[in-house]
Image (tube, rainbow, N blue to C red):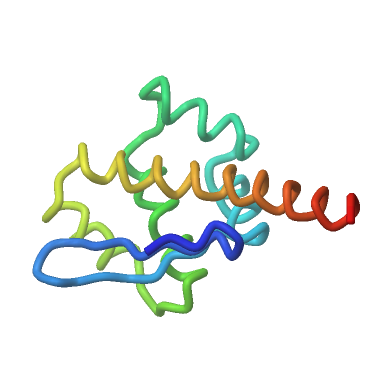
Length: 116
């Protein structure tokens, strides 16, 4: 389930483990701080294969924490090792896209309101 307006998504891992993740502005700022580049640059780096596994785990961890879950890096590393590196890249990409798309959705909603 994905809620673009609230930038929320359920991330499903193996063994029926799932977490709500949220990509609000605060999460985006935390990702920028952790990765050391802008949010857009982070998304570009993922697309070109330039994000490290550590950075991918950080993105997933921060999004899950923002979703209201008390989870540490160690647990996310375990979950990522179960699903594999390729699936972790997909999850991080989905989260980055969710943040970028939710901002577009918010702008569209604001434009609709101002036209009324």
